[in-house]
Structure formats: C-alpha cells, structure tokens
Image 1 (spheres, protein in one colour):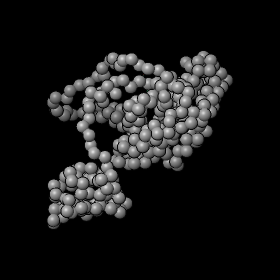
Image 2 (tube, protein in one colour):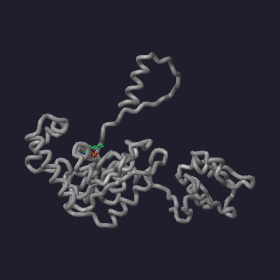
Image 3 (cartoon, helix red, strand yellow):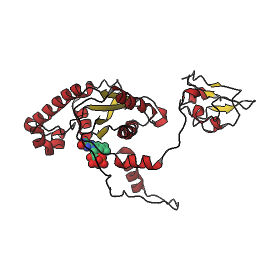
Image 4 (tube, protein in one colour):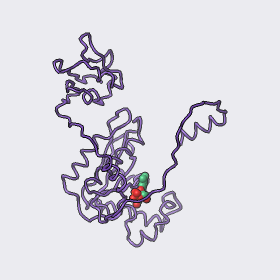
Length: 295
Ligand SMILES: Cc1cc2nc3c(=O)[nH]c(=O)nc-3n(C[C@H](O)[C@H](O)[C@H](O)COP(=O)(O)O)c2cc1C
C-alpha cells in the first residue's frame, strides 16, 4: 500500500533523527539536508504505527493525513492509581438491569482504537450489544437451547461442558450471561499475525478502562463456547467473512460493590541470570515443537 502521505514541516524539524531511529519498518531515512523522508521502498514497508508522528519532539511530522496537533499530549501517570485500578478490578456477575448511558458506551468504544495489535494489523471487529432488550433475547435463546441439550440431547461436548450448571439453568439462573445488559464480541481476521492474541489484549484494556468509568465487566468463556457451538448466535454478531470470534466480554453497571482488593496467590516467576545453551536431544526438540507451536 502506498500514499502514506508523509509530510515534514521542514522549518520545525530539528534533524534529530528520532523518527528514523524509532521506525520499526526501516521506512524512513534522513535526506541530504537531514530531514526525514521515506527510504527506498519505505512507503510500502510502513506499518502505519505513527511512531514518527508521536516521537517527534517538535511536532514536525504528519503522516496518513494525521497532524501532530490533533494528538493528545502525554501525561505523567500515577503508578499507585494504576496499580489500584488493576487490583480492584473484579469479575462482575451482578448487574443493574439498565443500559449504560450513551456517552459512557461511546467512550468505551473509542478507547478500543488504541489497543495494540501484532504488526499493527489494525483490523479487529467488535460487535456490541448495546440494548438490554436484545441481550435478553440472546439470554432466552441460549438458556432455552442449553436446557434442551442438557435434558434431551445426546452426549456432546457442550453437554459435558455445562452439565454442572443443569440445575441452575433449570431454576432460570442466567449462568452464561450473568444478567449483564451488554456484551462485546471480538473477532479477528483468521490470517491476522496474532489472531488469538489481539482480541484478548483489546478486552484487557477494555475491562480496565471500563472499571475506571465505574462499569463492571466479566470475561465470558461460557458465551464464547456458545458462540462456537451455536452458529445462529454467532451469525447475529455480524462477523465479517474470513474472521473468527475470539472472545466475549459482558459489561454493564455493577450491582455489587467490593470494599477491598483480593490477595491472590503469586504466580510462579523466575529470574534468568545466566545463559549457557546446551545440546538438545531429538526427543526434546520434538516435544518442544509440539508444546510451543502446535497447542
Ligand atoms: C479467559 C477468562 C474466561 C472467563 N470466563 C468466565 C465465565 O464464562 N463466566 C464467569 O462467570 N467468569 C468467567 N471468568 C472470570 C474468572 O472466573 C475470574 O477472573 C476469576 O475467578 C478471578 O476473579 P476476579 O476476576 O474477580 O479477580 C473468566 C475469566 C477469564 C480470564
């Protein structure tokens, strides 16, 4: 793709070369007057990350029709506030039975544009259920279908997965969607370099930003399973051709308040303090391949 439209304000440019240094694609070089320009083939290599626009200390670079004056300044962050945000986020399974206001919904949607994707492959697809009434229809459809499978269906993967929840479902509990008024379903092109990772990053950003706005979220593996097994449900998410649904998150105004953070058990963490590569046996090589690439 060409026409990346690199425009350098040569009066402002101080020839520091930071744009060239920070370009992952080696797409830029300094010309004979020490001003940035596309290197040979650079325009095609450019991954549209806009680092050149962002790093320029004097705002001399516009690219992709984006001008530096339209970017936000970068603030100093408060690490304690951010750590508290992370620690105090909870999976919310009790929601007020009402829609979020439009501005909050819009803020959540807008934020998603800033989540990173592998190779800056900026083609995620987000399907938002913004109206609780639509969510109620989805809930009824899925719960009715699951009850039928659990009570009448033959042995199947989905029957096994949800067998623990048969009684709760029969009692009318919304085991899958937890009464959430909203849901976002994220899909990515099957040929995206990081098809299974990008949507998860987007939802991780989403849940933290939502929490900062007083909006509760819950990762929903159960809803994802339903998307996988019930094509008529997935079809309603308007997923483009060639995309796969990667994950689902419930959200809405929480109807539960947590007074303190939890105290999780630490994960295993090691320090690598030396490097002595050793010969690897063929068996180990095969095992390594299967564990790290196939699964
Ligand atoms: C990938 C993933 C899938 C999850 N799926 C569900 C789910 O289907 N239903 C649910 O109620 N919670 C689900 N959870 C929430 C976890 O149970 C929850 O994160 C965990 O119990 C820790 O609680 P906390 O998130 O409040 O710290 C999921 C969490 C993750 C990360």
